Image (tube, rainbow, N blue to C red; front, top):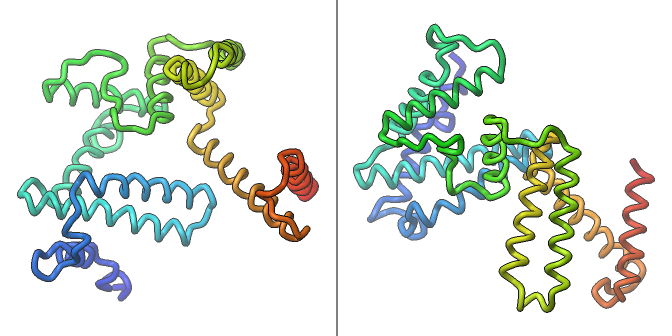
Length: 276
């Protein structure tokens, strides 16, 4: 047997023991002992995003570390639940194993699924039957979408679910037209007067605009979260390059006029284009 495969560092039980020690009331870590499901939840979300970022950068070494951080979150929640007598890590593993077998009858039973689209349809049908068995009689096509999802992700799921009923634009062109319509409505709200006097209506119209942007991304088969992540990376890269270029010229970027700052932006952008 491969010695590495039996090394304590590669055994999930070692991580479970570490987490239990951190939560030990007498010998544990004060910070870990203070935590609750609610206080840890933001870290869980953050670690999931860091996993996505490592994937986006194709950094497999970093992905290994980030997956470990995400696994720690699962272990942390399971430890707190075990302390309350609710469930433990083994129950979490058993639950997901049961679910994966149950929702893949085409693999583990005599179900049929010819392609990925059929698999997705079967998955949704099984989820509906599970909700009904649990006493949830919400028959809407939108049923089962988690309320705690990031809003850009929830927008895409709402639109995809609605599209399965036939309620969808036939292609990107009408979505682009709708985008122009919503943008014009935002312009009109800005024209009404000071922002502080019209905040609620601006929030409503900008929300509509963002919802249509999510719809456009769906029609383009683009993940809006990944697209915005790329845009954020690009902006940060260019902004830092502007600051660096200004320092090399002996000036403080924040003391430049906006036209001069925009000139640096154009220079950095042109340099990137020339290098590509």
